Length: 488
Ligand SMILES: Cc1cc2nc3c(=O)[nH]c(=O)nc-3n(C[C@H](O)[C@H](O)[C@H](O)COP(=O)(O)OP(=O)(O)OC[C@H]3O[C@@H](n4cnc5c(N)ncnc54)[C@H](O)[C@@H]3O)c2cc1C
Ligand SMILES: NC(=O)c1ccc[n+]([C@@H]2O[C@H](COP(=O)([O-])OP(=O)(O)OC[C@H]3O[C@@H](n4cnc5c(N)ncnc54)[C@H](O)[C@@H]3O)[C@@H](O)[C@H]2O)c1
Image (cartoon, rainbow, N blue to C red):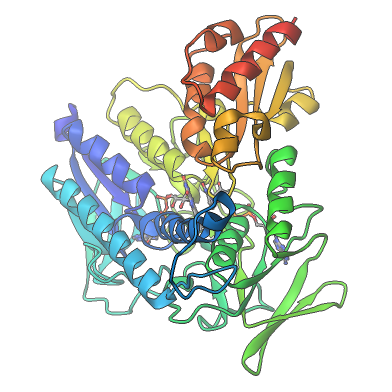
């Protein structure tokens, strides 16, 4: 059977789903995407895209407050001494939601232009090769007016069954909440509620210091809120490079954030115009709003998966192999519902791999060793390949060189003193196997390291490549030069 005779149904229109649908359409299959809330998924409508747009606004404000430090004054303007700018959160959120909706519409148009049918509704596996859709559930699939995920409007109109040779589950995940901290969408919030705020929280208590908690604590601090960050572990960003996390924690504190380490939130309640967070050790933290950033739960329940024999892991994730196959023939899964690595880029890759494999196209299995990722704080933290933990715990035999950006001439000109570059090169061969960049636009600076890791460049090839003078990338070349001396 050629791809043109095969039908693919994708449940979920986030990066895992829409990238798969585009890939399958390119290969000539008949493709349907079932999406209950809005195309682009949580990634575009409530999580990744809106949070990055909020951070861009906070960073913009920070430039105004930093201006004085490099000799720029606002002549004649009536600006308070240290801040001088105010975020109007209703306007900020309106812009962010416009951006998100526009991106959702772009995805819809792209899918339609490739001949993909988009069905608005909630899908479930009704048996081998059959997807049942309760149509009309949720907001508008074109992203006209997306409801916050998990708050889909109940307006089912019809049930439809669609036969498929291949079914891809790409239903994503939703914020984890605690029984003792039930979000009300007004003062006790998840990251999917914050886009409705019309007033800036006076004092935001962020619970959880993983990537989501750290990014949003950074954003609201930058927007002018008082922020308390509750971290259950010894430091913020427990899963990340420890040197990077230490830099960020120090910057957070210096800018006035209260960071409570080794503090686990047990409960959150509303009291008067504010919230009270009770920690497990009995302490209480008060604020105007609380934001839960305590992880995610995969959207895999009531989907007919267990009935169809699809194996789920302990935490409810769909188990997949490196070409996105589940244990049931013809059923694939991609993205956050698999728990492989919850990034939009990985979701998209898993989706493309799934359909290529299912439709018989050439495909390389997913390789997580080359994934770059970035934490959009200030400074940003970007990583690729082997980590410090891999080296320290003996999984990778490599040497590291770390250079602070405070010595880099370009960094000095730009008033940047926080951050560093770190490279890991394999002992003996001196092949670059990983790196960390902490600094402004680290998300862009990580690319040469990613290129080196993907193409197995050694430190000499890396450092003999010209860099611009003065530039931050000069520090990357210098780190590689220093590794030449110690790699053997
Ligand atoms: C605050 C935050 C910021 C983030 N920032 C970044 C970032 O900067 N970079 C990055 O790479 N990653 C980021 N991520 C992670 C990224 O958002 C996820 O990895 C990505 O959304 C996963 O894509 P997905 O397609 O698996 O799921 P989703 O984007 O969640 O899409 C799944 C879709 O499936 C739909 N769906 C669910 N069940 C059904 C059903 N039964 N029928 C029909 N439709 C259904 C949902 O409505 C949803 O639209 C961030 C995450 C969070 C929480
Ligand atoms: N920039 C990006 O690419 C980006 C941004 C956000 C999220 N993500 C992805 O999403 C993944 C999940 O990140 P996340 O931060 O949402 O979840 P997470 O599970 O990584 O972090 C949640 C944190 O909350 C803590 N926690 C749990 N219960 C707590 C409690 N009661 N009190 C205090 N702390 C508590 C946990 O110890 C953990 O550190 C990331 O690994 C990343 O892949 C990516």
